[in-house]
Image 1 (cartoon, helix red, strand yellow):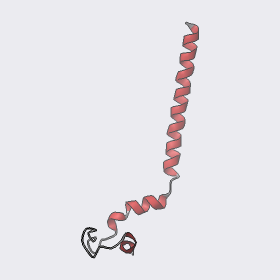
Image 2 (tube, one colour):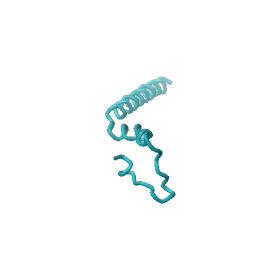
Image 3 (cartoon, helix red, strand yellow):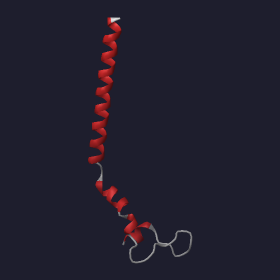
Image 4 (cartoon, one colour):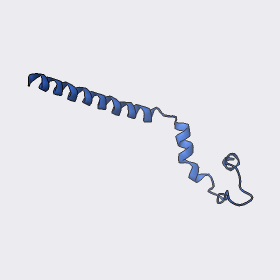
Length: 69
């Protein structure tokens, strides 16, 4: 029974260490991400403050690059 207890404690501690490494890795990945792409996505709803956005289904629609100007 002592071997089982030792292996159980070993598995619990290593799994906890793996979860901690995963958690810290996720935090680093989010904080070190490409902020320019996130900023562009976050500000996309404010691109047409003066006029409504053109509907892509009708004629006269502008492309994404033209809308950013």
